[in-house]
Image (cartoon, rainbow, N blue to C red; front, side, top):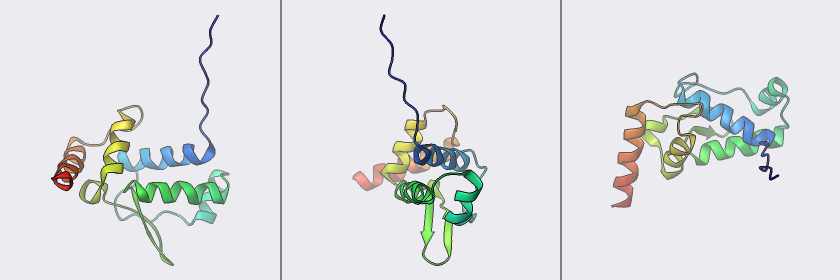
Length: 116
């Protein structure tokens, strides 16, 4: 009898997916400031270094903007998204978050323009 490999997300992956889903669902809106990494670590029980790495990945994917000495803010991914944003939207594929059709179209149009 064959068994499938069980994949359990790391705390960093879980936090990344959780924040990304909240952004895509509109629970976190563009311009909204996230709590500090220290506060997030206390609230979630996730190691601060894992949170830091997840936030850096969220920034790379176009979902948050980090402003040194001011904080981390939810980015307007529909207006400023990149290839990584589009990839993450497509990867999510409706499992938990379903970004609006306008947001998907906006990111797709911008990505196509960048390729041309």
